[in-house]
Image (tube, rainbow, N blue to C red; front, side, top):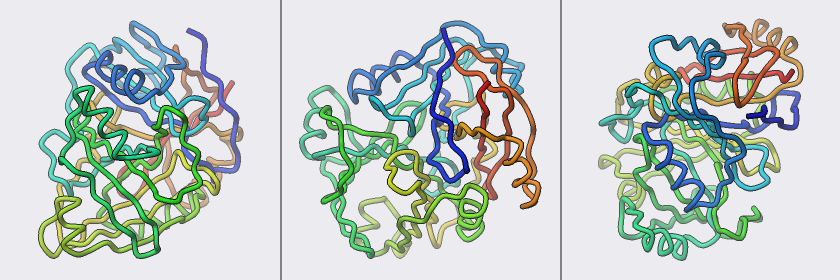
Length: 318
C-alpha cells in the first residue's frame, strides 16, 4: 500500500489531519463510517506494521488491520483505524459521562431528523429517542443526538442551524470537533492557543435543566465549553469540555497506541525542526521519532502531550 500524501501545513495553526483510533472490529467500524456515513477509505493494509509499532513503542502485540478514512475530498478531520491481534484495553470502558479523556467524535449533518430516521432504519440505536435542540449563550442554534459508538467512543451527530458549512450530498461531514474532557480548562486553553496556534471560535457556559437532560448531567452541574479551530475550516477542531461540580476519573493515561478507542491526534508539518524549537522555548517536553509505516511515513515526528494528557503527534513528510 502506498503512503498517504497530504498538503503540508505550517505554521501549526491548522486543523488536525487525523485522529488515531484503536478498534476490536475493523469490519464493523468500516461498515459504520464508510457504508453508513459515506466516508471514503483512502488506504488500507492487512498484517503487521513493525515500523509504526516501533514509532509507537508497542512491543507486546502486532497490528492486524489498519485503514485511513476521511470525508470525501477533505484534508482534515480524518481517522486512522487500527485493529490489534490481541484484545486491547478500552480507554472509556465503563466510563462516567464526566471522566477525563478524549470522548466524542462530532459529525456534522445537514438535517438531523432525516439522518436519524435514515440510520434508525439501518438498525442504528441512539442513546435517546429524540434529539435535543438548544441555543448557546453566543447564539448558536443547534440540534444534536448521541450514539454509543464502537470501542466505547461517544459519537455525536450535530446540526448547526444556519451554518454555512457545506455538507456533502450524503448528509454527513466529519470529523468536526474531537471533544476532550478536561479538569483545568485554563491550562488547556493556553496550550492550544500558544502551542498549537488554533483560534477560539466559541466559549460558553451551558447550564440549566435542559442542558442537564441533554447531556445526562447531575442536577446543578454546568458545562464550560470552548471550541478551537483553524479559521474557515469546519473539520479537525478541538473542543474542550469541563463538567463543573464533578470529579471524573483521569483516563488520559489509557489513551495511548495499543488501546481501543480514541488515542491521539496527528498533524502534518513541513518544518519539524522549527516546531521542536518552539516547543523547547515554551517548556514543552517531546520525544523525537520517525515513522516507517505501511500507510504513512515521516522523515521526522514529534510526540508530546497537552497539560491534560492528550497525546499529540506531528509528522514531517519525506
